Figure 1 (cartoon, helix red, strand yellow):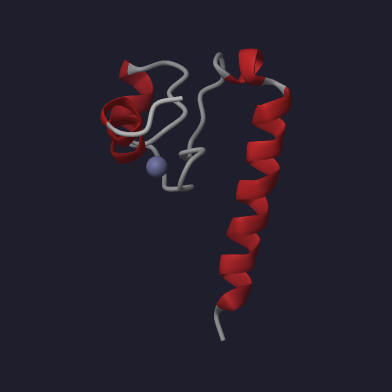
Figure 2 (figure 1 turned 45 degrees about the vertical axis):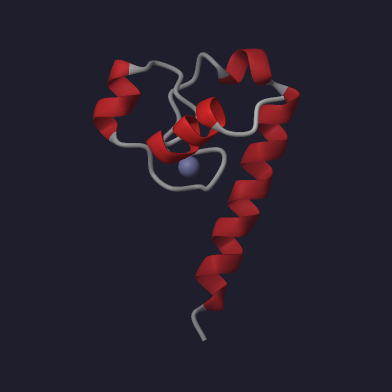
Length: 69
Ligand SMILES: [Zn+2]
């Protein structure tokens, strides 16, 4: 039990990711509440400091230090 929440979060994550994929330029101007990578909430301070931040600190640092496209 309890999987309903996980399913809902995954669904929201997928929809959000697909939406962002279609509107990347506009998405950059949005202030998201959740990381597009892991779905974790982005700290309010980070969102204010980095307007348009799409990822949480963990995913962002991983992106910058690790796998780069
Ligand atoms: Zn993240």
